[in-house]
Length: 199
Image 1 (cartoon, rainbow, N blue to C red):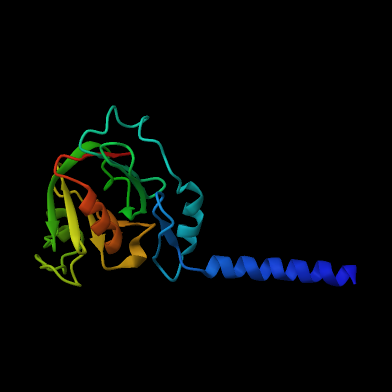
Image 2 (cartoon, rainbow, N blue to C red):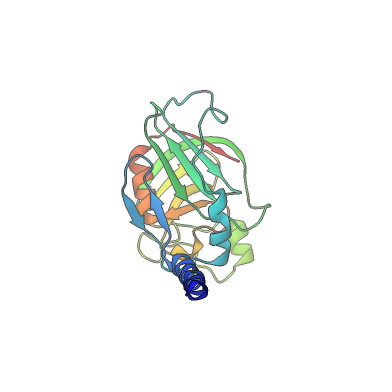
């Protein structure tokens, strides 16, 4: 009987673990119990990244929270947001640039906010992908998703994406991508002038 219970427990554990790995990724608003279902199929690279996806304190990165602050950690592929009072904190999974050469780090700020952004590939993108269209208007084919925060660096944005497979991966041409639901939430919290740090 004891041997049977051990085998059953081991079998239950393995089945439970397999089921847990197959469940959807969940983003949590750290100030409430609200959960947002994200992607149905978690890739192995996203699963490995979950261990480094954790809440951070703003003080090691910013001297103040004037106008709010956004920290993008390209290693853990996470965006952290604090409001001006430090009372409202959000953590979002992101896509990051495909290569180190495309990754820009340092301090910048939000200079423009656009709902329904249009997209034009940069000259270097067109060089790498000559068959890409020179312009894509707002809509489901737009790589910038539903909302975009334009940064003071030319061509760099924090934006949404309609292709949810990109989140949690090195998949962008330089920008930081979020699920459309998350960029909409972040968009509503940020102002022109919100400070941004990419590490």
